[in-house]
Image (cartoon, rainbow, N blue to C red):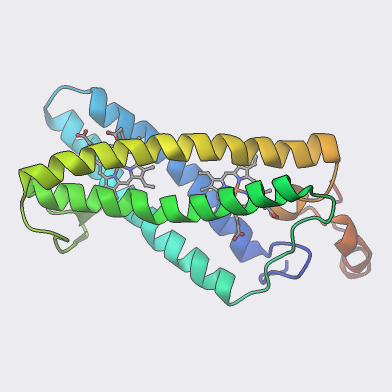
Length: 199
Ligand code: HEM
Ligand code: HEM
């Protein structure tokens, strides 16, 4: 298993962080929407408390992910991209990184402005980011909801891009983000190393 990125593929740490964050975002959006739908009561508070704890976990993982990215080579985009596709790939990746920070931070500011301190799975209480303010609380509800919609839109582009690479262009873009699959450029090395699957 290769932990670090190489110029042609994502290493195990980047892959793990990518797919762990994907799974947490799915749970996170579900809990956010459940919390929104439920009437005021224990169930709503429990769903939102879990939503906040998972959101803070995503914030921490996003920070680790960026740090790891700066400490590693970044695989270059495939050479077969048109300038517009290159722009879209860079735009969606940057947008996703911004949202991985902006969504948790606006949620945290929202809770602080409401006067509900944020706890991380009841293990640790986090400091309030701002003092109590009804105006800021209501503004943050709007911003948080708008950012969640932006995440959905950018994610749709991102997934469409990944699937186009895999099924239409038939290049290694998706494969190099999947564990256990050696991209073409790595296969000769992999074959010499161990009998790794080529997908
Ligand atoms: C990547 C992280 C996050 C995602 C994707 C996310 C997504 C969502 C979604 C889809 C909703 C329901 C729609 C809405 O009102 O916006 C929601 C609601 C909410 N989120 Fe988050 N959220 C994240 C992080 C956080 C964090 C870290 C906190 C607090 C520490 C938080 C606090 C809340 C609260 C309190 C609501 C209910 C808002 C209301 O009452 O209208 N969120 N979130
Ligand atoms: C919440 C969901 C997701 C988020 C936040 C996310 C975020 C990101 C980010 C920020 C990058 C850029 C990595 C970098 O340059 O450091 C990336 C790369 C990638 N993502 Fe996602 N992603 C998500 C879901 C998905 C899904 C569902 C797929 C597959 C269908 C996917 C496939 C890929 C692939 C193949 C790459 C590598 C692109 C390349 O090598 O140039 N992602 N993702």
